[in-house]
Length: 65
Image 1 (cartoon, rainbow, N blue to C red):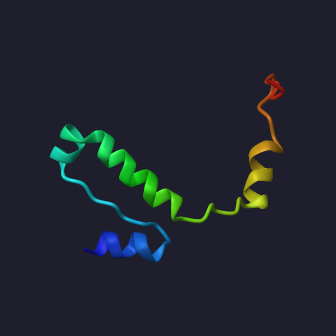
Image 2: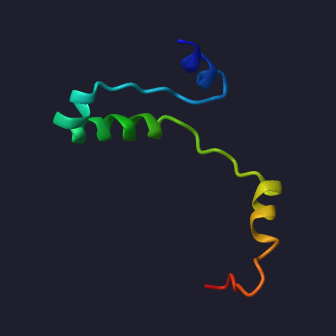
């Protein structure tokens, strides 16, 4: 599968489920996803990207909610 190979090359883990698993065993699917996430390191945020998100506020909008 080219899409899976591309996603893995980008650092994503691909987890596949049958529709029937989602419909009949959603709790089990969620537990599997949770276990997969526990085994993955947390990504380091990009300071450059974070700064661009908060450096400009739209006119008339206060970001100090």
